[in-house]
Amino acid sequence: MHATHALGLSPLHPSTLLTITPHTRDASASLGPSQHTSSQSMLPSLRRLTSIHLCTAKLPLAPAAIASPFGLLNQTPSRHLSSSIPVMSAPYQVIATKDAPSAIGPYSQAVVHNGVAYLSGCIPLDPASMQIVQGGVEEQTIQVLKNLEAVLKASTKGGKENALKCTVFLKDMGDFAKVNQIYENFFAPYKPARSAVEVARLPKDVLVEIEAIAAVSA
Image (cartoon, rainbow, N blue to C red; front, side, top):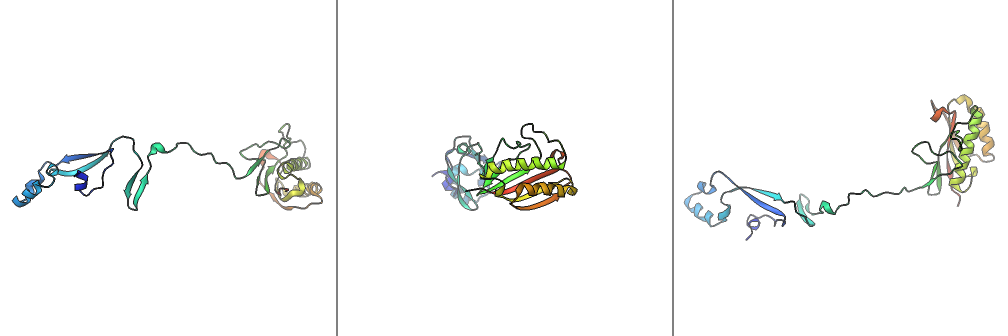
């Protein structure tokens, strides 16, 4: 009988070696005469056994069941596992148009998901030169709305009429009346939902930025 069966252990994997470390004192010395005789008939080769070390050789392993507090678990060798990380595709459509300024950071001009377009904030960059337009808040607002309309057309198959909600960021709330008049003329006769907030600073130190959420035309 295999030693592992005699000891009540589970059968070892073929790649597992049984190493027996002898103690400095014979285990039979502590037994009486009758006990000594019976012990000699039981596993004579293991009388001096005091510890068993299971050493796993560096050999290819096949999938095997291993013991755990939760029962038997399947063990899959690491050599069967792929080290590559799967590339996950985004659950939305990325929109990019040359009619609006290209992104100046790790973002998209807009993304579309479930029939809704989410437009990043537009600032008064000229799409051709990628420079801030000359002038004050009025000129900047006009350029912002031009850029916004270009992205609306690219992302919604429509235009400004598809806008659902706009958020206007102002460097100075004192410019609100000027921006509001240009904004109203641009969207008329449509009146999407809107918020307007003053912020401490905007990208490239512009005076106005507008972002939007829009419905995609069927």
